[in-house]
Length: 274
Image (cartoon, rainbow, N blue to C red; front, top):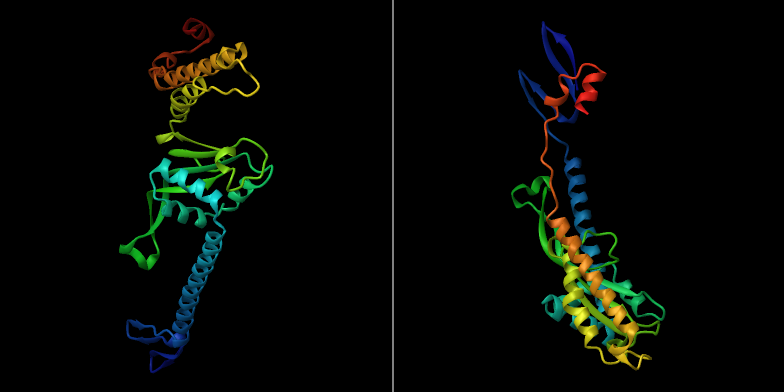
């Protein structure tokens, strides 16, 4: 802002804040050096904060890596085989996951009954190199393996799951007996098709070839076992019908109703139209 006083009929600047000088029609603004110093300090602090966060994350990862034992190695090997990733990639993913504690809860006595992993496209924020000055980003889909409760993220890819068969504490010596592993391929969100394939091509053949049915000595000859297998077959058939009905659903042609209602003037016209 400038204050002016008249001198010989001409306006002349008396004082100018922020180092602004008015000369004729031109305006030159000189920012104080203190402002640049403040901005520079903010950038330095921001950079230091990022470095500190990265340092803390690295420490946490190494602490988790040190906790890995035979139980974790069993999970890692199953995931690597099923999803076609290296065990090193799976390990890095697990120890970097915010939900790492769910694994420990799964191993605990009477712990979680299931442990889920999704492997699917996730939008990753990428810095736009052409416009770094404004900090704009691009969202690019990228395959990612992550731990999930199964209720917060949309399921659009592959689900790898571990199920407990008892309430025993999971140890390195019993993990292969107490934990079952399976996968559901629901690419593009085709959950019904993935579940149908899992049951019909994996579970039912495994059940029908099962020799040991525990206390049921007759095995597959037992009427209750036969009824159970029949129910599972019937359920798969229902899934298949539901999927086909959804895929081949009837789509009614959209009709322009204006041609039917534009000439309706009185109750008798409506009755006739009805």
